[in-house]
Length: 549
Length: 61
Image (tube, rainbow over all chains, first blue to last red; front, side, top):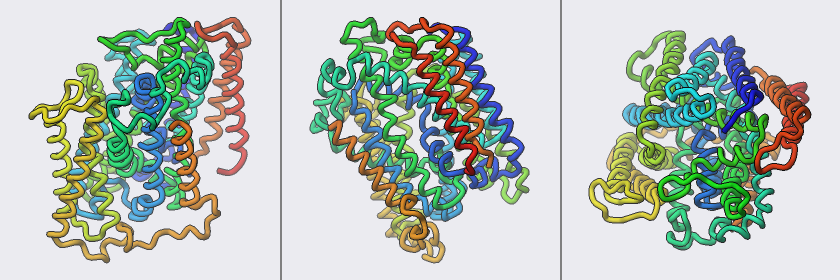
């Protein structure tokens, strides 16, 4: 990529705005709640866009475009099967308990519902996950700076860390959320022209379909058997592994996204946050996946576009940047690169703000110093921001050393989020679930994930105990690890709960379905009712699945 | 809360104007696979989006 002065000017223009938002918001941060939870005062449209923007990190933009080129429209299952149903579920069923319990974090909900050990287990694993995720976004951003500015990797990582640290340190969660919204618009406006130009050049969707094997343009038709499609998954693994366990585990229990909804200014707004976010979310495949598919069609057209080779296959990770180099002239190239950097910063800031809340509330206040003045926790939250960013720099170097860390991260999600969803499902909807049951279920689920990984192999990974089964792809292996982890956690939680004493029902108010008065929605306009929004989103999502069947 | 629509509107209007100016001053500036003045068209679109945000910021949040 060769940048002109106008491209650098656009990058600088964006960074000044990002830092400016943190600078203006700093005056409004007076308490730890302002810094870590935004004081539950953010408008609905902002929390909704932040809800999806926090998830639009490096993996989303570059990874989905690469997967589009590699697997075709089947990649859209990560949205239409692997996100939308879970987003509807968390908005309609789970948010009343998250918001109504007044928990400031997901681990804190686990403490209210179960006990301290369950909360601590989740807080520690989640904090480790956020540091990993943030580090990977920082690594990707560092590589981009290195490529564009010609700086060394160290200088690039430190620059990206300093920018994110500056605005999250100054304005806390509010600053991160406001910047995520700005970044969301920038990502959309920066990549929509690329999607239009690439698809038009490839002859529209019909031109793409004519130039590629049918499996690349059909989402369900080739899922009856794992060896029929390049993703290597069959319909059960897809629906149960991705559509149920991994997806619900992420969208319903990951504090990174739930935190955005908890910042909303009312219960009604918190419930509608994931529902409204689902509307743009289901159309994002057209911006990040379809250009990847178009890239493969362009390669077959002989127009001068090709992907670099890496080893014995294409380097799919370069799909997005090579498309930008071919379709964006100076000026628009600056906007596209700024959008790319925005997505990395969005992923980093989202994880850093989730980390500092969990560290301050669930680890520091829970175990190290209780009952200190609020100003003390505000200071701890700010220091946690610095500490989280510094740890992320460390994991960025880890990613630099090991080029398979993205696979490792997906694996960690299967280890942590999949069993956690079973814990939440039982905890929120079965009042008989006990703290001992939840804790042993989480331990059993994580152990089952490790055993599945150790006893199965895929693409020369896993099978460190014995190779009892070989999966066609790492993705298929990750889906099945999640299924086993969830099932083990679910079964052990039920068994141990039946053998131990549950909490009195009086202590479960606002925490468990059936002993909580759900917020009435009759007084709301019909368009604002969660069920109406969920049915509308669900209908469009089903239609998209049928259209690309 | 601070109204994000105004700064977002200003940012995108500014960004759109920069692209429009590039498109007008260098109309022959092309990427290898494009044959239209994409800077001008995209700049106009981004500018319009910024304008809508600024217009919306006149209404209460």
